[in-house]
Amino acid sequence: MVHQHRVALAGAAHLELVFGVAQLRPEDAMFDAMLRGWRAQQLARGLKDETISDRERLIRRFHAFANEYPWQWLPGHMDEWSSHLTGEKHLAPSTIRAYQGDVRLFTEFLVDGRYGWGPACEDAFGTHPVAICHEWNTIAHLNDYEGNPEARPFTREEMQRFLDYADDQVERAVRSKRKGALAAYRDATIFKVIYGWGLRRTETSKLDVVDFGRNPKAPQFGRYGTLNVRYGKAKKGQPPRRRNVLSVMGWAVEAVADYVENVRPRFGCEDHPALWVTERGGRVKPSEINARFVAYRDALGLPKELVVHSERHSYVTHLTEDGVDRRFIQQQVGHECDSSTAIYTHVSDDFMNTALSRALAPAFAGA
Image (cartoon, rainbow, N blue to C red; front, side):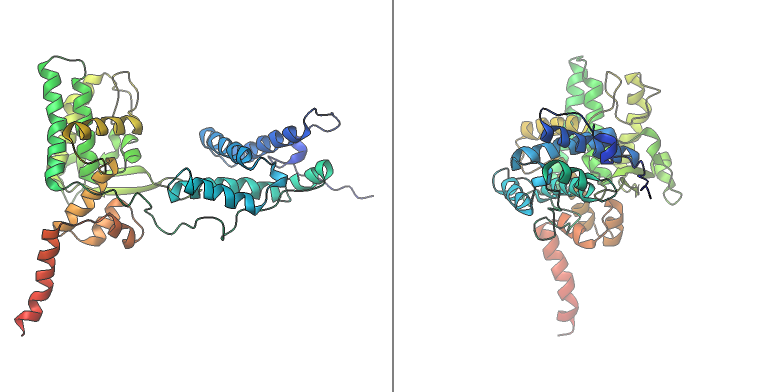
């Protein structure tokens, strides 16, 4: 008699299920075992606990919406959920696609024969899990950028007003001898760095002091000639993408140099690697950057269409208007496709008219 050897694969059903014990709620016990198995499989792949927990919460939300257990899920449940997220929750396409991706990963884990969840469900309930995410009921990843089309860059005048206002808050805090002067100076520099290097909010919050380096071709910027962005936007299932951003705005270099050398040491966090530290010795979070941005924007009465990401749009737009090479800008902001950079570009009417005049000049010259 030949005995089949079962490999102890992390997440396998026979490792998570308790056999021979009567369960008061066998469906819930099976669902919980599936989630434990999926967690074990993901941990074995080196995923972070935070990522795994977020995915588990998403699966429980889908379970509550479908009001069925995973071995009863059908493609129609995904159709209904996607319609709900779009029509009632009004979520962005990129968010919906991410949610769909988590459900896809979970169901693919369940239907993978190596883990044994199909036979376990057949034995217990007479049915088994099936794949419910397909190309016809999920959103394809078509673009690097899927943001709100209403978002726009700052005009140069708006950008100057915003940065001037941020500087004014530092002076006000110093004059009134308030405790928040250091934080105000830090935040003013944060906004200058976002615009000066065309960064995303999360990329900015995760910068460390050592991420700045020299650029031999721009010695005038000293140790701030290039910025190593280590936590660029990742593709689904992949690690963050790194890129080096060359410094191009001298005034921004001066601002960050002054902060690093004269202001940051006064926070008393010499051993902390973060570029942006709090008065309690932690790292500034993206939500804190957003909160300060909104406060300044609303105080100035600027349009609500302007968000932190608008500074990144402004970087692309203003460099384009200044005649900087398009390919260089694309590499600076980390876009794989020029079409994504094009979406970020909102040049002014004056620039368009000037560019059109230049384009037509040769034709009229020969007339």
